[in-house]
Length: 123
Image (tube, rainbow, N blue to C red; front, side, top):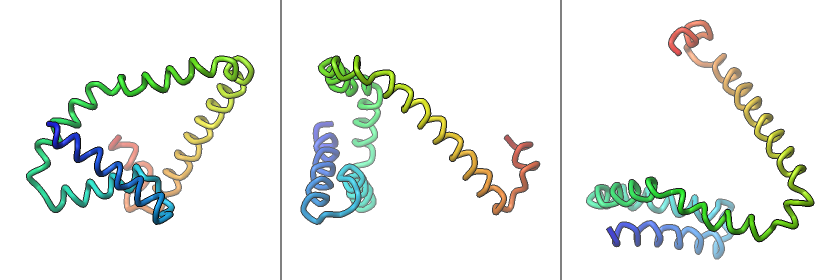
């Protein structure tokens, strides 16, 4: 289990190093995922071990939110000053994202081989 966790961390680290040294316009985390994907394509024996580790991490994902929550508590003065604005901006941007996603989906649906009526029936 430790070697699979180390593989995840090494891929993350290498992705960050590539991002910072080569100035690649992708985040280091994405580069790390691409490196992990390449590794898993080349070394297939790692898959079961990695599956166990990722299952454990997913089951305990709430632990990963503790540092962010503590960081929010430290920024109490900023939140009392700008909290309502941040909440309103978050709600509006979330609604706009949903509306744009629906619009793009409907636009893409027009160009697919499946007509709208038939698509709705299958849902």
